[in-house]
Image (cartoon, rainbow, N blue to C red):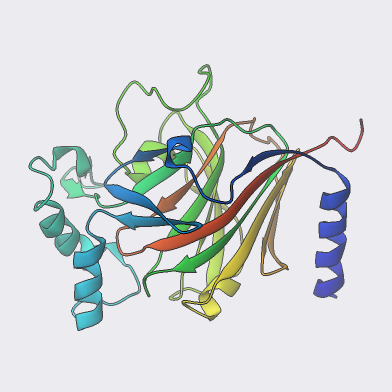
Length: 269
């Protein structure tokens, strides 16, 4: 039954697909913007996204000192120590904790496409992890009400979740490749509200390339992995058009290729 539903959704999408917004055989880093301590390079036809301390974090994961499940209390001390080797002042990576204390939250980063997307679109890409650890995310419909884009905030952003989930920014976010939990989770900001989740095929076979597709059409978001429908969300108050990007956590690293974004035409036109 799921097979036929998947084919049905893909057929609908292809019927109403319109202008290709982004489709480059070789990614151009000038099209993107990094927020936070991360590195982006192009190797062949692939975009390689790694945290600044990727090498060091992978060493402690491989040694067994740090488990690959990516729980913050476990990796905080490692991330802070390794970050201090590259950054002299870590102040911007601290937040105020629930008990009023200062907590380190650095090491993650965002990778935004500078071009703003229309209200209705599809994003597809191939993904291959470079780490046994989570987590990767695709962000979309990101905007700041009253501003033309998201790139000139009143306060600089440094890759912290609080800056994009509990701020003036609104967005949808789908996290994937989470071997410890086996699900892809969709959240809505502001507020980091969980709105949908489904079994994550990308987590079943680590280090094997997977194909991802996000379709946003008016009030509905659909997410597919390897031609399988993973989750669907219908928003009673859908977010407006905005920007899209990837988010990579400090224990993760990934290879992205065949990134394609297409405008979806209004089927009522």
